[in-house]
Length: 364
Image (cartoon, rainbow, N blue to C red; front, side, top):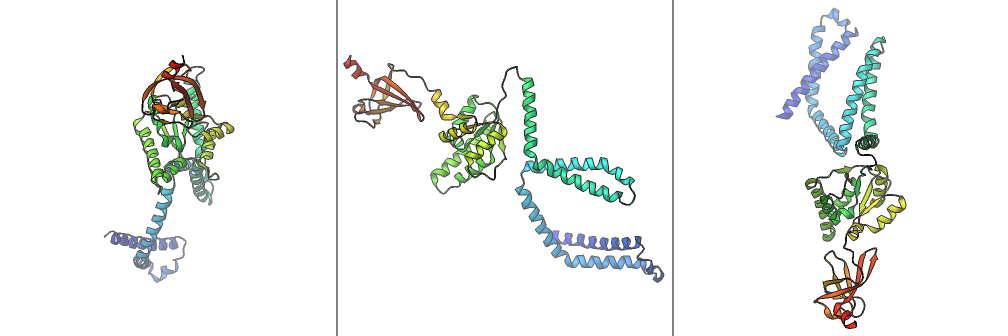
């Protein structure tokens, strides 16, 4: 039914086109020779019918071609980010408005005035679309700068601006960032780069079940942060096509938007320091908030396994801190009192060395 309606419309367009062509030929005095033959009125109808028949016959091919064109346009539009489409529309309207204000000046020029006016509309419409989309990042940075300057004026004297926090893949999968944000200790917008989302998607689609679960966990954490927590989340579309490594892209993005990278990757932390990028390491935060234990303190622990050295036993605090109990192998499975002898801080965390309290009492 729809194809029949379109076919009728195309036929009517063909008839209209034929009549329009005849009117154009008459306006330029090419039909004066028909005046004497007295067939000019019939020529309109005849040419219109001829064009109508031609369009009626060709309508299936025209519709097929139109469907292909629409499909290509739809595919191309789907590839364009929504932000680019919005900026393009706004830029197009702005360009046409400027052209509308200036074009009346060209109408004063005889002959070429209308042509120049049309060209002016085309040029300003084109630049209105191209300039905002290609300079999107510059516009974004300019707006952010204006916002930061405005916040500086409103904020108390001496208050520092809140920098955006860029999350890397490892800290998203880790999941603790959601709990930290919930406590309110993290301020400012959380920036999720588009290339990090793509990496999470690849991990979630992995054939390896462990990787797949980690990727899905990361996506769930992002949904939790975005929906449940009262904190601004920004999906940043800036990419660096000439760089393959995600970690390097993160550092470049941090330099680009003047933000901090949030991670639990020790190696990324070191590379970021080399590039002068500020890093918030979740592991360092976890170690910093662990309770301070000093030599000579007593505690109650459960020895759960033997240690690396002969006779050693290993216990853990509630926060995961490892306690190496000298001579604790014979107490595996028991809950005993121990006396802290020393504390060792390593890159991996904090280790506590202790002896069974009964052994120290005997020594005394």
